[in-house]
Image 1: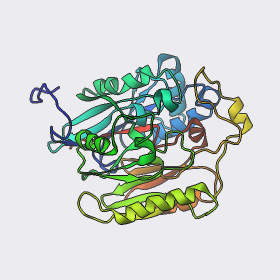
Image 2: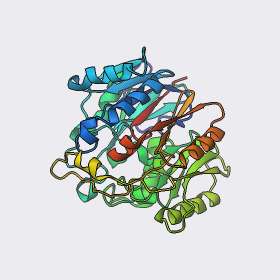
Image 3: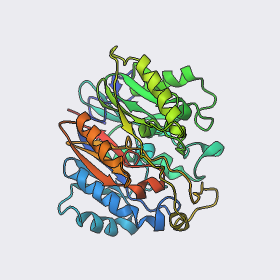
Image 4: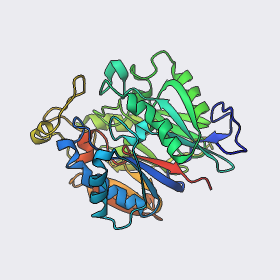
Length: 375
């Protein structure tokens, strides 16, 4: 806390703070090393090189803060140095239950003077007792505050309000987009009405308008996070996961989301220019070998052979000067890169084969959390 900062904080909106857009300049990024046996095949053996590649790419243009315990730090350092000789990385021994930095880490807000603070939401493993993915998530729930402490930043406590970073997307100019499937799910805040949840988002994100999309990506175990289906690429511009196959359940979901966006305007009164970003042409499903390489705890959600995974190119990450986009070995991979290159003409769009992250339950955006620049 700085000398000029008030000791008593209320909520971000009342204090003049708002959530910036991800495309704005970053001071850094959080990443958490993958080791959970029930999420990562062979205890992270396949995922670790992908995390190392992402760590290397990000650390070349902004500072990376990597959460990793003492047992795995040497291995993490060694794998990262295989792809980057001098990474700009700060290693943090902050315990978590898994590696989803987007959801367990703080959401950052900033004021007009450039002061940055974090927001710590209540985390209950994507649904708590109702449909949560694992039972013991105390370390995940405590991580956001500790991550803010490591940066020397103040942190708002949102109390019992359940939210994950992947369930919100901001244009940095007062508009926040969410999905009804996630935020109105019975495992989040069942005692609150849609209006009450919207008011809460406005207070805690400094938002002026909340746009509710009906759904996300088919079979997304997060109850359909928005960051897997929709993303702002600039104020007034966005991408939406799109399916052209009427026989695919995603077809109707994409169409319903587009209908909402075509009728809405953002907080500034602009129509949002939406680019359609195709989903993979073939469903990505779990293999027997992948299922057999996972070790689940009691009460943990288990995967099955043939289970359809929520593959989406929208789950990209914007860092300084780059866009890191997942690839699945699908014919639509190149088209996704082309469309994103059009959406981000001033950034390098870098394809990263990321099936190992998808098998864990998310993708590149899910495992990263941006720290906005205070300038």
